[in-house]
Length: 537
Image (cartoon, rainbow, N blue to C red; front, side, top):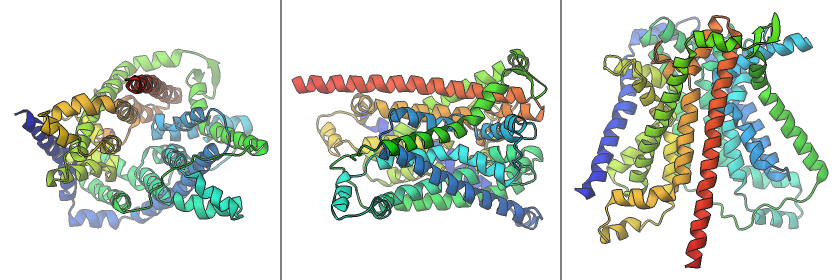
């Protein structure tokens, strides 16, 4: 019975993923009729929306990827101090909803924006400019983390050989650095493109008359309850994400060059270069933090821009608007999403990484990766079509379930990569000794991968706090999280309230990141002590 328990749990998890991942997408496709396709495609708005979505996405993707690469390259190729602090600071935009970035730009550069009034700046924020600016702020940290990690694994011996051959720095960059980063660049482009193309938060705040496909889908489903037309747009939004998913999957499965670092990168002293690096990093950080500064300034003013005196009245107004309920909802959703998401994704990774290449394991692996190709807005609408008649619809549970699935793939890959590094013969040895798989899981793998588990938990928590996509289709007044309070307050012209809510979400995520940091440091210290004790014995 003990030997079959892990198999039973695996099939239960597989059934759960089939119901919560595959079935909703099948239901989405089943809602589409020929007349719906004709109505959407023949609409006078369709081609302009498609053009707006692709144009803003391409521009934002190019800027995000280039900026992320430059920041990561400067941090890795100069002697800038406090490197880890810079990395944390550049990932702060990941800790607030995309809609907050759009709102931040409005607070800065809108008709009554802080910088508009203070400096007399007049930029055409509403439209392409605002969508691109907000999308860059929202998406570049993802590409930055990819590039930063990859650049740390470059082998310096290749550069030494090139230097001996008389190659210039620029030629080394073109012939060594860029080719070695090719796969990471492709992954970053695909990830950023998908994020921007399917986001409706930034365009909703800064789009003005420029309508994008996600905003149109949001208005069709939420505003007009046109689920069939929304399904057509959902499939269109799904197409680029699936193409990106298949390209990335093919790239990861193909045999490529494996870099073995025999010598870490040696950086020569160059004072002028390092000063320039500090200036560039500080300028980028300043521009990135401007929306957050705007939140902080406007959260505690009486009435912007009429009365800029300090007050705590906005806190009282939010309390009277029942922010406490939304606060509790967000915390409950984030904690439950992190708990169940970490457990499910870790067990799925254990089954696929440590149980051989059986058909059921291959299917489990594919379904675990599939959420990468499903945008949040598409997932949310498909859940409406699939589960609207069930008892748990309209409760916090449905929001937890959709968040677990929405963010499932990345933590799954974290655990899968960690568990794949163990000796492949461990299971055979355990079987010979009569040790069950579940005992191996809890006695060997979980204690050895606690660092990864903390990372997985943090990923689920932060994303559940900031998401506005899937949950916007499934929430109601009683279950609404904090992130969706932002557009509601903005529609009521309570700008100070939107800034304060964004600041609260940022503070909660920073607190969680701080707890995770100290937890991971404690784990590393314990691992170091264990290694020292083993050496003594």
